Image (cartoon, rainbow, N blue to C red; front, side, top):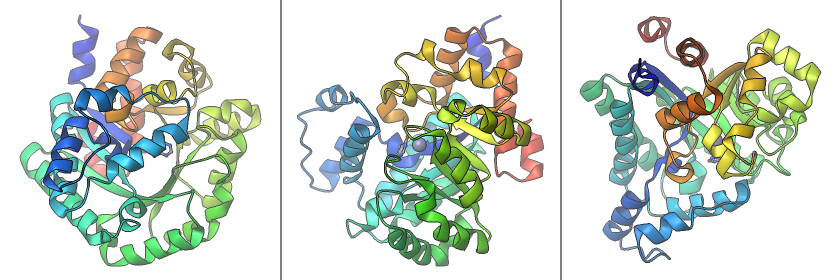
Length: 326
Ligand code: HPA
Ligand code: ZN
């Protein structure tokens, strides 16, 4: 029995993936050239060498800089298409993708340029690979709530392409309560809600995202472990947590994969899913995360299958699609 092969072949679902974080250095250079932009790196190797971070903010600085090469609808198509090709290669059959419109609208790129490119790639991923996908529009929490509300207003003509809203970027100093109003508006519009919480910020952010933003998934959530009562409540409610092991190592949430609290989270009965977050920056895609964790924590095939099933259950796919993925 080959466990790595088993993990490759099992049907997988990804619930925490920033499309801007799937921009590989090779594509970044290609788009820079196409758009006549000079990157502050001599080569792909040079850029890769810069991917060493001491915290979330150091990563975000490079991630926003990298996103500047994305200018045209075709660029957004090419970005998403490259990710769908890796999904096809790795047997990721359903994926719920974050995108950050403000990263682009702040640079004068129209929101429809972003959405049209992403939607065209999604349609082709379905016809060519049978991969299904949903888009989740994230608000940047280092910007104001007014800017988030403006973004939601600008997205109104495209809501049929957006399953929900999320909250990402710098967690420190930008707690969930800052975005209560825009999340209430999103709920009114019938959108699903998720939020990054308890990645670098305290367990209180997990509780408040749940309580005040009324989210149906928590992104990361690893620091919930600092509040035992909260852990019991999250487990009892089977609130899905989209955990990103490679991300937590690269951003020094934990020092080494072997010190990751995943085994503890599973032991506490939390509804854990495994995800890649920003695979181009963190050293691997969903399959790589699953394979490394399985080695490090000596997971059985049954445990792997359970984690994959958790992601199916936590997804916003239709009941019909969920049964196909199970
Ligand atoms: N955390 C917060 N914001 C982000 C992340 C993350 O892991 N990735 C991309 N934007
Ligand atoms: Zn993330």
